[in-house]
Image: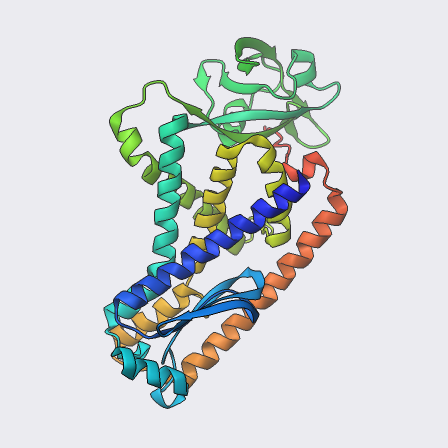
Length: 378
């Protein structure tokens, strides 16, 4: 299973890279631009072949992305290679700088757009087969001697209601039970497809100054076929992708504002591989969901207005258009080199944290599933 998980992780990352770069590639081709290279991975090439003006290759460092080289992109025509000049004349192509502004914009966002389309397609397929997604609160663990253990909660229970209020998220459960110290709360749970009701009395901890139930809980997605309408089949993937995107943007904002720790939250290739090995055990649908999550996550990050990312290119293009100025190619090159160096530094930091996490967790189930106790506040 470990080898299979590793191969699936490599496949997931490789497909995401291919989709993103193919988005840039196909828009550039349709715009008549000379695309001289299409690479999956960076560094020295391992395999390659050429069709028309484009060299297609797989490079030796595949897990950190890929690139599409367009002739004349952020460079003066004099910097074109001799082969590019010949191909432009032979196939009557344009350099990137000769494209119109709207065409350049489409090239920059083409990768992210195709990623979004892929995510919508996958989630639409999942909904059509499994049903519409419904949030559930999953009990991942129960502390010995806690109010939860006394009430009879066990790992694997799904909390459906607190008293008469339907519970769809961890936050909702926390909000409902705030101020419920030493008060009886009726939890409606699902256990092995059976519905049960349990009485629990949350306890106030003077030491921690908050109300505790004594459970490790995590949000979990379930799929239901009941009450499915035609628009759930048609637009369900769009809605699901939109909700997932909003959650990712909220997470990024919390990272920027310091509400979340980069060390604890950011996940690099090593941790993706470790998580994939566990996701594979849960079934093909969960693998598809994991793929969609990683895919849309990387798409949104790529749209951030940061040098070397697609969003950074869009920002520069927008500034040039709005102010009616032309930033010199050399200045763009410097901006992107600095941005790329910062991105590489960030990736190295995340990789270091991945290795540290891997060593400390020893692949324990609790760390892999990222179970986390959400104590209830008074």
